[in-house]
Image (cartoon, rainbow, N blue to C red; front, side, top):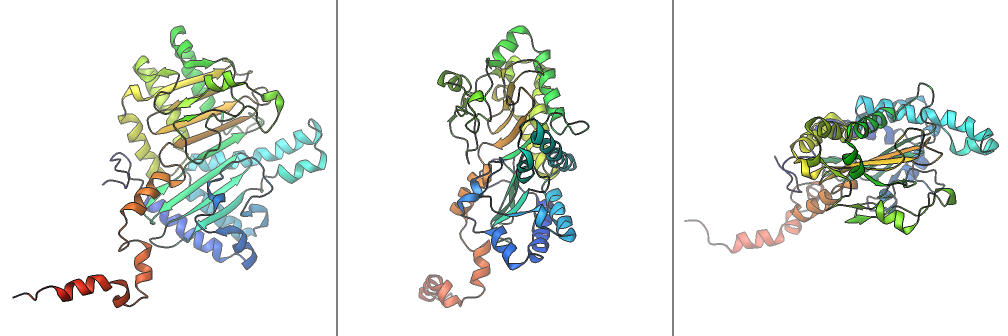
Length: 394
């Protein structure tokens, strides 16, 4: 079993998750009013599909949880669960819940007053769809809001991609709410287990970027540099030398190479990467696990920037030839985490879509549903003419 990309380790097939997504989508969209549908449902080529930035924005498309009735909220959460593992779903709920705490903090500490309620809301998470959710079609759906950016692309109703998948947390932790804590503890454990020489190799810069090095691009390029500032806040600025030191290069990422780790540390580095990956349905995460575990140590790199204690601003990433996980805790003096994991080839379905469109001969997939409605003399004119011209069999 292979994929359109020819990567034998990944099939990107997740029939149970895709089925649940489709059926729940039908139920939820079917419950919407005409106005809600018009705001939630977009063409597949709508440019907003690839804008996965999870900061609060006034021009978001979609229907927020706050507009749904009780039955619709059950369906929305069923859809969310279809796109996540149980642990991933639990993390998402915790991220949403921290908005209540952040709102109270910002009313006083940042003097946002009543305005904080407008954009620190545990129900300000928008659901939207792109394309035609149907058998054999290519479509996508998304949940986006503060500190959550989940992006799903279903190619030909057969293949599923789930990246970029981003989550964040502020404050960190927030009492019993600690959705990002486990990954941070794993990263500090790995850094602490390294020798002084290994830590020096892993520690690529003494200043952390304010956000992802790969920013919010739709597909990671060969080289990506972090922004100079985070949301234009000068206090979190870095200069060009910082940006170059923090760069991510696909072919030669900076940091500590897996071949320089002992077996236990390499295993922990892989588990750190897989911790981010395993927020998604098991059908896919198991494929990614096999991919990561089969890849040679030389293809894994662990990098760290900024401080090396928990009360400082810091950043880390783990990458392989096809995957990247980034986690940044630089803003608010190490009390504001952004994390993302990315498929370097298939974010937002990129390479799968290209391969699907290039290889699809239009007899299979959604095209055949349209052909069912058109006379054969129109759809198969060349084929009919060819056969009529061929000699009759003896």
